[in-house]
Image (cartoon, rainbow, N blue to C red; front, top):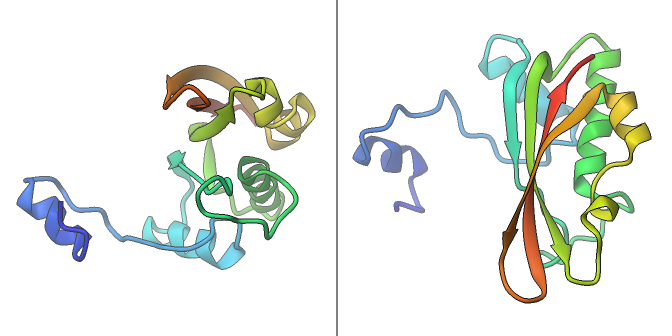
Length: 143
């Protein structure tokens, strides 16, 4: 693994490099605009994300969970006619959940999903230790 030159890591493994590597908060309009620009202004077929939840990162800049914030951004882009995710596309996100929580309480509400035009279709658990699991939640964009 080449952590200082990620593009070099792709070529050393014989993999096709990505069109671009972007760093930033996907809830910021400019970051999403840059991402769309890389693929000609189009929407993505799939978005895979492992957002910070404040467990290790100590993030507390927003009251809403990161996945809920991303859904709000998807709605905002759609309403402006600048979709980030195609209808029929997939949003896959990793969501941490402690042994004191229910996974349903860690995910966006049905109302938030309906507003974003998303429907949950996969929910799989990866236990990390006795106290913490990481869940893969995959949503289909239906509107």
